[in-house]
Image (cartoon, rainbow, N blue to C red; front, side, top):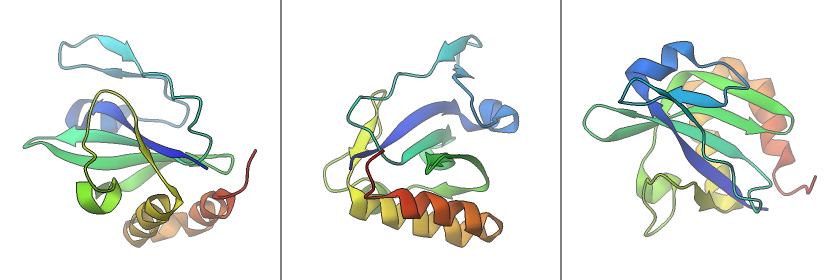
Length: 130
């Protein structure tokens, strides 16, 4: 199973408006931009992140297991820990394996304990083909 992380715009502008099912974000030019389509091989967890000032990136939305969750407490992403060796943030989705996806979900849960049941459903879907 392949999982991915995708850019979802600047945090200050976009996070207050973020809702499950969102398909676009407001760019730094003030215009709406459609999200880049997910690569076909991303058949598992989908994590959306936004950029905060200072080139800090935070996970803000998790999709998987039939859930689409906006995180009340975004998770600061650490590239080595949450993306894998040699990967970086870019305009294209970043692919990660099951091990990294589970690390991200564990850290998301630690910051968002009220989403425990929903995040468990997402976690339980990892490794199960649709």
